[in-house]
Each structure stands twice: as structure tokens, then as C-alpha cells.
Length: 428
Ligand SMILES: *Cc1c(COP(=O)(O)O)cnc(C)c1O
Image 1 (tube, rainbow, N blue to C red):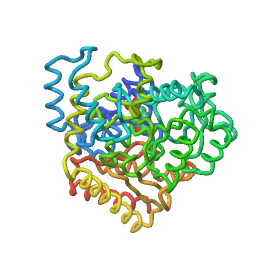
Image 2 (image 1 turned 90 degrees about the horizontal axis):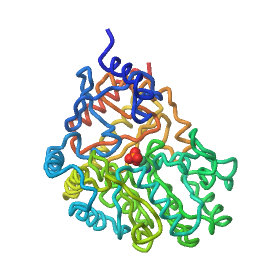
Image 3 (image 1 turned 90 degrees about the vertical axis):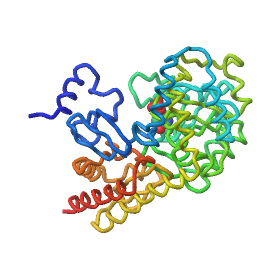
Image 4 (image 1 turned 30 degrees about the vertical axis):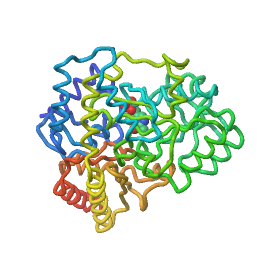
């Protein structure tokens, strides 16, 4: 008798490509049937067969307060009762913009959009419009949404333009993108020395979270800042994942680097579709209707979505919020490190704020090559063992994990106990 999850997946595959509306949900990397969720409350989710899991995906980061936070749900209901969308300005968008400007010193002006992809795509267009240059620099393994110019893998050499990493992307679109190695300061310096005056912008996940979690090496972000300043290129921190997830000041606050533009998403929508890009006023002034760079959105600044985001930002601004979240995430990571060590498993974990990585290698990776060098098969077995234990991790060895304020110490300790048990089974 097949499970309800299996039935739903079979039916979905007939009408939705791969059965999913975003590829990593399909469990292709780990194998097996994706869980269809019916309900989430606090730190837990329930699947279509009624099994519950401690959730460390949190909708890929947005749910920093956990599932169905009562205050956020109420804010959404209140906003919805006043109208779902106007396509005209609302006071709540002003409040949201003022809040983002107050929270991030690098942001003097900001525009709201409906997804992280829109935010990065628009920020790049703006950087190009501002500089009058075309060349975009990104780092392998960093994900910035699915716009054409970003679905690019490295070319054959440092100074050769990238190749499309997806079918359907014309070479012309990827042909302005240079792909460097994350954390490689020498490459950055060399590239700017040779091509600095052609570079419109550098976009980076300042703490990387889309190739599992990788922290910037000492001096890496500084090198980006210095080179961009010297050559008049725009430095874009893509904080769609890290924004208000690693700390109230985001990565730019933790590492004390001021980008020219910042992209946001995930947490600022609290589970609803909100993205944003903002930064220096002289650059933001180039946006239509003031300036020549066009960008628009029917549902941008949607009142129901903004209500969820505002309530979320308000709650995470409470004194001690990030200290507690950071400590709880550290408790998880310390427990996993100890459990791996005790079981003799070649795995480790690391965290920044409410984000963590579990790596099947001896030490946390510092580069894309190192993360790719981890034991993917061991992760896949661990993933499925944890799922049986009622712990839902991201279904890929190359994704970061997220702890929410709804995770209790008891949840964390239960997760560590489950991990210890799974490591023991892996060791056999
Ligand atoms: C999730 C993510 C995006 C894309 O956001 P969507 O809302 O999925 O379009 C962009 N950049 C980073 C760093 C992300 O983690």
C-alpha cells in the first residue's frame, strides 16, 4: 500500500514537471519521495501521511519565527481583511522601507519586489545602468536566483566569460558574466587589475549558503570592497538568505563591510513573497520613474505579504533575539560535532547566527571545490535516516540548514540524539 506522499507525488508528476514547483524539492539529489506537507506549527511540520518532523528547512530560511507564528498569522489576516492588493502605494510599504533603512546603514533607499530572484536581477540591471558597463562578476556555487545572466558556470579560464548552466540561456546572456572562486582573493585582485574598468558589479553571498554554508575568509570581503571602490564597480551583497538570518545587522554588520547595494528576501517576507533591493541613494536614484533603469511589479509591496514581513522584522528586533537564536544553533552544531566524533564519522558542522551547515568531511569547507569534495553518499544515507527519526533536513548535501526561534533546547537535544543514532548506524 503506497503512502499518501507517494500517491500525491505520482499524481503531481503528471501535471507539474518533476512533480514540484522548484527543483530541489524533488529529492533528486537524495533519492526517494518528497514529503508533501499539510501543516506546520512552531518547529514542526506534518506530512500527508500524518508523520511529524522537526523542521530545519523553514521554507529555505524565511520562517525564522517558526511555522504559523500567531502574531504573523494575525497580521496577515488583518491585512487581508482590508484588501489583497491595490497596485497603488500603501502606508505599510513606507513603514517597511523606513524599517529597512533604519536597520541597515548601507541602505539609504530601497524598493520592494516579490522574490529574491527579482531583487538580484533588478540590482544587477541597476548596477549596469549606473556604471554604463556590462560585465558582471559572480562566484561559483553562489546562487542569486534564476535570471539568465546568473545561470552561468565558469569559463575555461579566469578571464574568459562563463557558459550557460541551463538550457534556454543564450550565450549572449551569460557572455557578460565572469565566474570566480569564492574566497580566492588573488583571483579577485588579478581580475580587477586586468579588467577593472569594464566591471559593472560584483555580486556575492557574503556568507555563502547555497553551496552548503561557507564563511568568507579573512580579507575576502575587504578585497571585494577595495577593488570595487578603486575601479568604480558596484558591490552587491546578496543577503536574500543571510539578511536578518545571521544577525540583525546581516552579514554586512557582522563583518563590518558596507556594500553599495544589498538584495533581501526570505526573512523580510516572513514566509510570504517579499524581496527588496536597496543601497546608496545616488545609485537608487537611477531607478524609474526617477532615472533610466526600468523595473516594475504588479504585486510589488503587496500589503498582505508586507504585513507578514513587518511583523517578522518587529519580532526579531526584540532585545536578545539573535543572541538566543545563535546560541541555540550553536548548541545544535556542537552536539552534531560531538556525535560525529563519538561515532567515528568523518563529518562536522558549523553555524553563523541561525544558519548552519553539516558537512561529510573533516573540516568545514572554505571553497566550492572543498564542499564538492564532501561525501555526498554518506550525506544521502544520513538524510534518510534522520527523516525516519522525524528530522527534516534540506534534501541535498549542498544546502544550508536553518533554526527558528520556535526550536526549543529540547528540540535541539532530540535532534542531536537522533543524529548520534544515525551516525552510529552509518558507522556500522
Ligand atoms: C533564495 C535565494 C535567492 C532567490 O530568491 P527567490 O525568492 O527564491 O527567488 C537569491 N539569492 C540568494 C542568496 C538566495 O538564497
